[in-house]
Structures are given as structure tokens and as C-alpha cells.
Length: 187
Image (cartoon, rainbow, N blue to C red):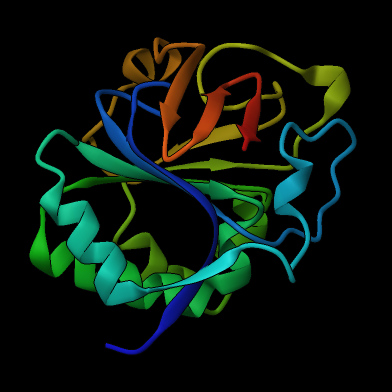
């Protein structure tokens, strides 16, 4: 498989990006420019790095500690067609849970041509633009206007809302502070 995804960062074992232990992928590129965004370093479409879908899937599947993956950003759906290829192959090779955080509202997503197929691979979508004046610091929403869209019964609202607020990890000469209130990637 030769397709690639543009990535900002990966945390192979995260507890602050959904229930249980998750492989969290921050995608590079976002055009929403939400005021007060916690991760503006993910906005540029020229930064980040390319990873092969096959290599990413192998890395994810080799990680026996995780219950699922979280796709965040940036805006993952700027790469929607390639993400569908990625998720389809991942689902063929694993039974991992999938959470997608997107700036698109659910009503915007439902009219996207790719949404019917995309939705077959996802358990939970956290949908909506970040609104700084409605900031919250629990769960995965970030601001009160965002909505949880449960596409399966794999997760409960209680599991999502009780995810840890933050975590600090050190690996590969980086310090990563991540959670519902902040994502900082330090060299």
C-alpha cells in the first residue's frame, strides 16, 4: 500500500484522548482557524510529515496495550479519502475502537459525499468547531457546542466524560503534554 497521510504527531499510548489506552494521531492541516485553538501548530498544510498507511497500521497493530485509536488534529478530514482507506484496512486487521475529533458539525458531515463510508468505520465522532467562549475542560469536546455522535455502542458518555484531563509523556527526545485542555509538543 503506497498511500500516505500527513501527520503532525503520534502518541502510541495515551490515556487523555479517550477511554482506556489509545494510539492518538494528530493530523497536519486545518482551515477552520478557531480562535483559541489548543493546537495551532497543526494548522499549516506544509508542516508535518508523511507516513505510509501500511507502516502506520503495522505500528498500531504491534501495540498490544491499546484498546483503540483517536484521530485528531488539525483537521483529520482534510485527508478524508485517504483516512477512509486507512480505517478500512485497519478494521480488516484489528478490532480497535475508533474516535474521530473534527471541526465539522454533524450536520455538515452528513452531507459530505464520503460520510456514509467513513461512518461505517468510526465508533464515536466529536463534532463541531471549537468556540473559545464555550470552553470546557472535561471529556473530549473542548467547548460546550461540540457534540458527541455515537455511531456504535462501543463507548458510553460516562467513559468519554471521565477520560483523564491531561497527561505528560516523554519519548523520542520530546515532551508531550496532552489532554482536553491542551496539546503541546516540545522538542
